[in-house]
Image (cartoon, rainbow, N blue to C red; front, side):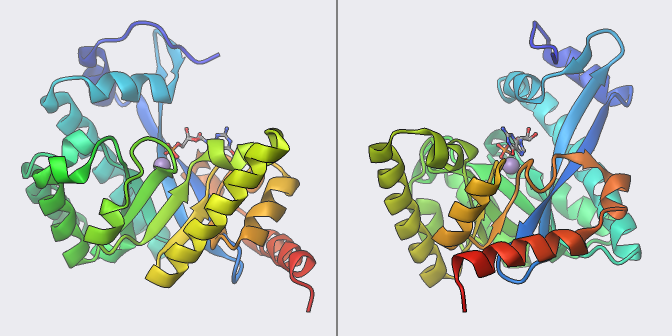
Length: 279
Ligand code: G
Ligand code: MN
């Protein structure tokens, strides 16, 4: 079991300095054309003293730490992901890589200079990456975030709304920005198979409408946390554009991504589509 006990933000900063953090990557598979439509970067911390530390746990602590720790972490995240993007592009892996950004990081305008600096340093085109943002509060209450996201959109960075259908889930982000992707939270996807008929039915109706709305607005919909064939069938039937989850691939080290046989999987995804929509 990963460690979920006490940690200070100083310990997290030290872990960054000592190279204890690493990134795993989880690909998302297209339900429309087959192939990989994006790759999410997910941080892992293997501590010499604490062992494997639970990611959700230490990110939660970091979110409530002083801004300097948050900035330090994002600096590390951006640099590592950018290096990986360059390495992959050299061998023909061109899917955009999505980074999970904290809203507290995006709330300070200085983040734009930092992001620009790394874009130039690594010679990255802004469209090669995206940021996943979780709505933690209403965007109208955060003019700074609005400014930062508007700017990032303008230069071509992809904006994905993470954990959609939970938390705030206001439609303000969709109205105010050219959001590229909505990621439907895994709890919703998993409810599609486990909850009572009444609840499953309500969730399907909401998702169907959400997907139709996203389609009309030109926004891609990704189902998160797909773990079973049944869930894959349902999200295909509902019309999601892509899916991510253990059923396709868990988060894995970058070099394992290079060796993956994506072709085989694409055939599976397409045969599910044929099953749901026979010619
Ligand atoms: O909030 P966000 O969507 O960024 O969370 C991603 C987290 O979900 C990662 O920690 C990842 O390990 C986990 N995850 C990825 N795929 C699955 C899945 O199929 N099922 C479950 N339960 N968790 C998953
Ligand atoms: Mn995410």
